[in-house]
Image (cartoon, rainbow, N blue to C red):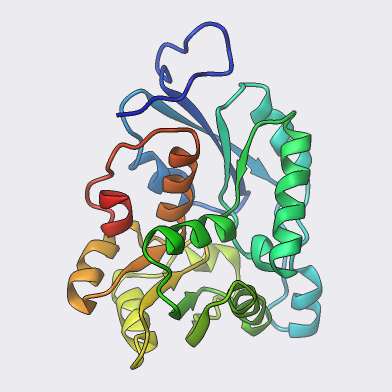
Length: 257
Protein backbone atom coordinates (compact mmCIF):
# COMPACT_ATOMS: atom_id res chain seq x y z
CA UNK A 1 0.00 0.00 0.00
CA UNK A 2 1.30 3.43 -0.88
CA UNK A 3 0.78 6.38 1.36
CA UNK A 4 0.27 10.08 0.83
CA UNK A 5 2.00 12.55 3.10
CA UNK A 6 -0.38 14.86 4.90
CA UNK A 7 0.12 18.54 4.21
CA UNK A 8 0.25 19.21 7.96
CA UNK A 9 3.41 18.69 9.99
CA UNK A 10 1.61 16.47 12.51
CA UNK A 11 -0.14 13.32 11.35
CA UNK A 12 -3.92 13.20 11.77
CA UNK A 13 -4.97 10.53 14.31
CA UNK A 14 -7.59 8.95 12.02
CA UNK A 15 -6.59 10.23 8.59
CA UNK A 16 -2.97 9.29 9.11
CA UNK A 17 -2.54 8.32 5.46
CA UNK A 18 -4.76 10.96 3.88
CA UNK A 19 -7.69 13.31 4.34
CA UNK A 20 -10.05 13.52 1.36
CA UNK A 21 -12.18 16.62 0.92
CA UNK A 22 -15.48 16.00 -0.88
CA UNK A 23 -17.49 18.81 -2.43
CA UNK A 24 -21.19 18.10 -3.05
CA UNK A 25 -24.39 19.96 -3.91
CA UNK A 26 -26.75 20.65 -1.03
CA UNK A 27 -29.31 18.18 -2.36
CA UNK A 28 -26.90 15.27 -2.89
CA UNK A 29 -27.48 12.31 -0.57
CA UNK A 30 -25.50 9.61 -2.39
CA UNK A 31 -21.89 10.80 -2.80
CA UNK A 32 -21.12 10.95 0.92
CA UNK A 33 -22.23 7.39 1.85
CA UNK A 34 -20.86 5.82 -1.34
CA UNK A 35 -17.43 7.38 -0.91
CA UNK A 36 -17.48 6.51 2.80
CA UNK A 37 -17.93 2.86 1.85
CA UNK A 38 -14.73 3.05 -0.22
CA UNK A 39 -12.44 4.55 2.45
CA UNK A 40 -9.20 2.59 2.86
CA UNK A 41 -7.74 2.21 6.37
CA UNK A 42 -6.14 5.43 7.55
CA UNK A 43 -8.07 7.60 5.09
CA UNK A 44 -10.87 9.92 6.20
CA UNK A 45 -13.47 11.77 4.13
CA UNK A 46 -14.71 15.28 4.88
CA UNK A 47 -17.72 16.80 3.11
CA UNK A 48 -18.60 20.41 2.33
CA UNK A 49 -21.87 21.38 0.66
CA UNK A 50 -22.61 24.01 -1.97
CA UNK A 51 -25.90 25.85 -2.18
CA UNK A 52 -28.41 24.31 -4.55
CA UNK A 53 -28.95 25.30 -8.15
CA UNK A 54 -32.51 24.79 -9.39
CA UNK A 55 -32.54 23.67 -13.02
CA UNK A 56 -36.17 23.88 -14.20
CA UNK A 57 -37.04 20.61 -15.92
CA UNK A 58 -40.19 22.12 -17.46
CA UNK A 59 -38.19 24.67 -19.50
CA UNK A 60 -35.24 23.06 -21.30
CA UNK A 61 -33.86 26.34 -22.62
CA UNK A 62 -33.70 27.73 -19.09
CA UNK A 63 -32.39 24.35 -17.86
CA UNK A 64 -29.54 24.67 -20.35
CA UNK A 65 -28.69 28.17 -19.13
CA UNK A 66 -28.26 26.88 -15.59
CA UNK A 67 -25.79 24.16 -16.60
CA UNK A 68 -22.28 24.84 -15.37
CA UNK A 69 -23.43 27.34 -12.74
CA UNK A 70 -22.63 26.43 -9.13
CA UNK A 71 -23.69 28.59 -6.21
CA UNK A 72 -21.28 29.25 -3.33
CA UNK A 73 -18.75 26.74 -4.68
CA UNK A 74 -15.80 28.89 -3.66
CA UNK A 75 -17.09 29.26 -0.11
CA UNK A 76 -17.57 25.49 0.17
CA UNK A 77 -14.02 24.92 -1.10
CA UNK A 78 -12.68 27.42 1.42
CA UNK A 79 -14.28 25.43 4.23
CA UNK A 80 -12.64 22.24 2.97
CA UNK A 81 -9.27 23.94 2.60
CA UNK A 82 -9.32 24.79 6.30
CA UNK A 83 -8.81 21.12 7.24
CA UNK A 84 -5.89 20.85 4.79
CA UNK A 85 -7.00 17.76 2.85
CA UNK A 86 -4.58 15.98 0.56
CA UNK A 87 -7.02 16.32 -2.33
CA UNK A 88 -10.55 17.57 -3.01
CA UNK A 89 -12.87 15.33 -5.03
CA UNK A 90 -15.76 17.10 -6.73
CA UNK A 91 -18.98 15.17 -6.21
CA UNK A 92 -20.97 17.03 -8.86
CA UNK A 93 -20.44 15.78 -12.38
CA UNK A 94 -22.64 17.75 -14.78
CA UNK A 95 -20.73 21.02 -14.40
CA UNK A 96 -17.46 19.26 -15.19
CA UNK A 97 -18.73 18.26 -18.66
CA UNK A 98 -20.24 21.57 -19.77
CA UNK A 99 -17.95 23.42 -22.16
CA UNK A 100 -15.69 20.48 -22.95
CA UNK A 101 -12.08 19.84 -22.01
CA UNK A 102 -11.02 23.49 -21.97
CA UNK A 103 -13.76 24.39 -19.51
CA UNK A 104 -13.01 21.37 -17.31
CA UNK A 105 -9.32 22.21 -17.08
CA UNK A 106 -10.13 25.86 -16.35
CA UNK A 107 -12.61 24.77 -13.68
CA UNK A 108 -10.02 22.57 -11.99
CA UNK A 109 -7.44 25.36 -12.12
CA UNK A 110 -9.89 27.81 -10.53
CA UNK A 111 -10.87 25.38 -7.78
CA UNK A 112 -7.25 24.61 -6.96
CA UNK A 113 -6.47 28.33 -6.75
CA UNK A 114 -9.38 28.88 -4.36
CA UNK A 115 -8.14 25.91 -2.30
CA UNK A 116 -4.68 27.40 -1.98
CA UNK A 117 -3.00 24.85 -4.21
CA UNK A 118 -4.71 21.70 -2.90
CA UNK A 119 -5.25 19.39 -5.89
CA UNK A 120 -8.79 18.84 -7.18
CA UNK A 121 -10.20 15.78 -8.95
CA UNK A 122 -13.10 16.51 -11.31
CA UNK A 123 -15.50 13.71 -12.30
CA UNK A 124 -15.11 14.27 -16.04
CA UNK A 125 -11.32 14.15 -15.91
CA UNK A 126 -11.40 11.19 -13.52
CA UNK A 127 -13.47 9.21 -16.04
CA UNK A 128 -10.96 10.00 -18.78
CA UNK A 129 -8.20 8.72 -16.51
CA UNK A 130 -10.16 5.52 -15.83
CA UNK A 131 -10.77 4.96 -19.55
CA UNK A 132 -7.06 5.48 -20.18
CA UNK A 133 -5.90 2.88 -17.66
CA UNK A 134 -8.48 0.42 -18.98
CA UNK A 135 -7.01 0.60 -22.47
CA UNK A 136 -9.20 3.38 -23.90
CA UNK A 137 -12.31 1.39 -24.87
CA UNK A 138 -13.36 3.53 -27.82
CA UNK A 139 -17.13 3.06 -28.03
CA UNK A 140 -19.25 4.12 -25.06
CA UNK A 141 -22.76 3.71 -23.79
CA UNK A 142 -23.58 6.52 -21.36
CA UNK A 143 -26.28 6.65 -18.69
CA UNK A 144 -27.25 9.95 -17.08
CA UNK A 145 -29.98 11.06 -14.67
CA UNK A 146 -30.47 14.32 -16.58
CA UNK A 147 -32.54 16.13 -19.16
CA UNK A 148 -31.41 16.30 -22.83
CA UNK A 149 -29.34 19.54 -22.63
CA UNK A 150 -27.09 17.97 -19.99
CA UNK A 151 -26.91 14.71 -21.95
CA UNK A 152 -25.78 16.67 -25.00
CA UNK A 153 -23.01 18.41 -23.04
CA UNK A 154 -21.83 15.07 -21.68
CA UNK A 155 -21.79 13.39 -25.10
CA UNK A 156 -19.92 16.35 -26.60
CA UNK A 157 -17.26 16.13 -23.89
CA UNK A 158 -16.49 12.49 -24.64
CA UNK A 159 -16.58 13.06 -28.39
CA UNK A 160 -14.04 15.86 -28.01
CA UNK A 161 -11.85 13.48 -25.97
CA UNK A 162 -11.84 11.01 -28.87
CA UNK A 163 -14.55 8.54 -27.83
CA UNK A 164 -17.58 7.43 -29.80
CA UNK A 165 -20.87 7.63 -27.94
CA UNK A 166 -22.96 4.86 -29.47
CA UNK A 167 -25.84 5.26 -27.02
CA UNK A 168 -26.83 7.75 -24.36
CA UNK A 169 -29.88 7.61 -22.12
CA UNK A 170 -31.04 10.29 -19.72
CA UNK A 171 -33.40 9.16 -16.99
CA UNK A 172 -34.97 12.66 -16.95
CA UNK A 173 -35.36 13.00 -13.20
CA UNK A 174 -37.32 16.16 -12.52
CA UNK A 175 -35.31 17.34 -9.50
CA UNK A 176 -31.90 16.62 -7.95
CA UNK A 177 -33.63 14.82 -5.06
CA UNK A 178 -35.46 12.59 -7.52
CA UNK A 179 -32.13 11.37 -8.88
CA UNK A 180 -31.41 9.63 -5.57
CA UNK A 181 -34.57 7.52 -5.88
CA UNK A 182 -33.23 5.47 -8.80
CA UNK A 183 -33.57 1.80 -7.86
CA UNK A 184 -31.20 -1.04 -8.77
CA UNK A 185 -33.92 -2.37 -11.08
CA UNK A 186 -34.15 0.95 -12.94
CA UNK A 187 -30.38 1.32 -13.24
CA UNK A 188 -29.87 -2.26 -14.41
CA UNK A 189 -32.61 -1.93 -17.03
CA UNK A 190 -31.17 1.37 -18.28
CA UNK A 191 -27.67 -0.07 -18.52
CA UNK A 192 -29.02 -3.00 -20.54
CA UNK A 193 -30.76 -0.53 -22.86
CA UNK A 194 -27.55 1.39 -23.68
CA UNK A 195 -25.54 -1.80 -24.09
CA UNK A 196 -26.12 -1.70 -27.83
CA UNK A 197 -24.00 -3.70 -30.31
CA UNK A 198 -20.47 -2.33 -30.50
CA UNK A 199 -20.36 -0.69 -27.07
CA UNK A 200 -17.03 -1.40 -25.37
CA UNK A 201 -17.70 0.27 -22.01
CA UNK A 202 -20.67 1.57 -20.01
CA UNK A 203 -20.23 4.96 -18.30
CA UNK A 204 -22.67 6.17 -15.62
CA UNK A 205 -22.56 9.88 -14.76
CA UNK A 206 -24.61 11.88 -12.28
CA UNK A 207 -23.40 11.57 -8.70
CA UNK A 208 -26.75 11.43 -6.89
CA UNK A 209 -27.80 7.98 -8.04
CA UNK A 210 -26.37 4.97 -6.28
CA UNK A 211 -24.64 2.48 -8.57
CA UNK A 212 -21.29 1.81 -6.87
CA UNK A 213 -22.32 -1.58 -5.47
CA UNK A 214 -24.06 -2.67 -8.68
CA UNK A 215 -21.03 -2.45 -10.95
CA UNK A 216 -19.42 -5.81 -10.20
CA UNK A 217 -22.60 -7.74 -11.07
CA UNK A 218 -23.18 -5.58 -14.15
CA UNK A 219 -19.69 -6.31 -15.42
CA UNK A 220 -20.18 -10.05 -14.93
CA UNK A 221 -23.49 -9.94 -16.79
CA UNK A 222 -22.33 -7.71 -19.64
CA UNK A 223 -18.73 -8.99 -19.86
CA UNK A 224 -17.40 -5.46 -20.31
CA UNK A 225 -16.23 -2.63 -18.03
CA UNK A 226 -18.76 -0.44 -16.26
CA UNK A 227 -17.62 2.90 -14.84
CA UNK A 228 -19.81 4.74 -12.36
CA UNK A 229 -18.90 8.28 -11.46
CA UNK A 230 -18.62 8.19 -7.66
CA UNK A 231 -16.38 5.13 -7.68
CA UNK A 232 -14.25 6.55 -10.49
CA UNK A 233 -13.82 9.99 -8.91
CA UNK A 234 -12.86 8.57 -5.51
CA UNK A 235 -10.53 6.00 -7.11
CA UNK A 236 -8.85 8.71 -9.17
CA UNK A 237 -8.48 10.94 -6.11
CA UNK A 238 -6.78 8.18 -4.14
CA UNK A 239 -4.45 7.27 -7.01
CA UNK A 240 -3.53 10.93 -7.54
CA UNK A 241 -2.11 11.12 -4.02
CA UNK A 242 -0.32 7.76 -4.18
CA UNK A 243 -2.81 5.51 -2.39
CA UNK A 244 -3.08 2.28 -4.39
CA UNK A 245 -5.26 0.07 -2.17
CA UNK A 246 -7.57 -2.20 -4.15
CA UNK A 247 -11.21 -1.43 -3.39
CA UNK A 248 -13.01 -4.76 -3.28
CA UNK A 249 -16.64 -4.99 -4.35
CA UNK A 250 -16.68 -1.96 -6.65
CA UNK A 251 -15.86 -3.48 -10.01
CA UNK A 252 -12.82 -4.06 -12.17
CA UNK A 253 -11.40 -0.53 -12.12
CA UNK A 254 -11.29 -0.18 -8.33
CA UNK A 255 -10.21 -3.78 -7.75
CA UNK A 256 -7.49 -4.00 -10.39
CA UNK A 257 -5.97 -0.60 -11.22
